[in-house]
Every structure is written in C-alpha cells, then in structure tokens.
Image 1 (tube, helix red, strand yellow):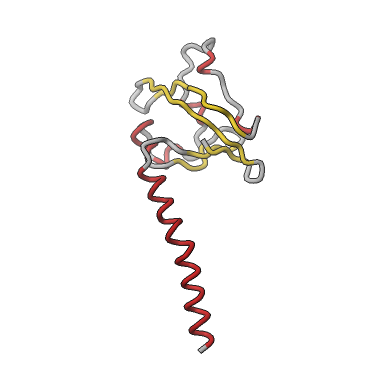
Image 2 (image 1 turned 180 degrees about the vertical axis):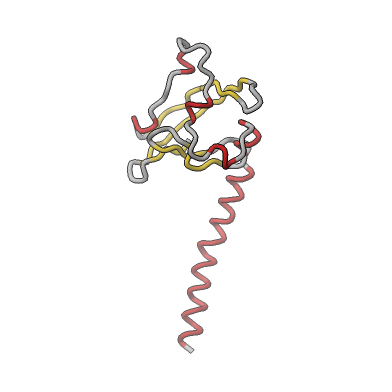
Length: 124
C-alpha cells in the first residue's frame, strides 16, 4: 500500500512541476518576440520559434552560431553596430542592432540582456 501511495505522490509532484513547464514552453514558442540565450562568446545556445519568422533561420541553423555573424557591419562607425560583450555586466538595458535576415533584408532589433554568472550565458 505504501508503494502505491509513494508512486501517486511522485506522480503528483511530477505533474505539479510538469504542467507549468509545458505552459512556459508554450509561452516561449508563441511569443512574437525573439527570445534566446547566448554564451560568453555570443553564440546562440537556445532560441525560440520567433527566430524563424524574425531572422529567417531554422532553430538548428542558429544554435552555435555567433549572433555577431548576423549583424550588418556595413557602417561600423555607427554605434548601433558595435559588438557587445554579454558577460560584461549582469543586466544590459535596451540596445539596438541591425541584423541581416537570411533573405538578405536588413532588420532592426531592440534587445536587452541579463547575464547569469552561474550558468555563463545571457538571456536576451
């Protein structure tokens, strides 16, 4: 009898945490905003589905790619195109970058970033 109760309790705990995680996944998947994480080198570690619509790349194409490789560098004197060190601070206010869509169009994106010293990545 104790085994059944323990299994039921474990299932309840699993469901308690699983359902909010599923809901969070849906929020991230259906967000109109690009949400991603980048490591200290500026490489994409994770991106949500909005990246496909906004940047034109499949998720698999972005993972491991440096965000800087997608930035338009035609006018390097413009501060909008300066490289950004994600690991430089714990929170970065909104900044703007010119990106090149996979189809070649230039798009302007406003970003903000929060660096996590424990996991060594930024949520952007």
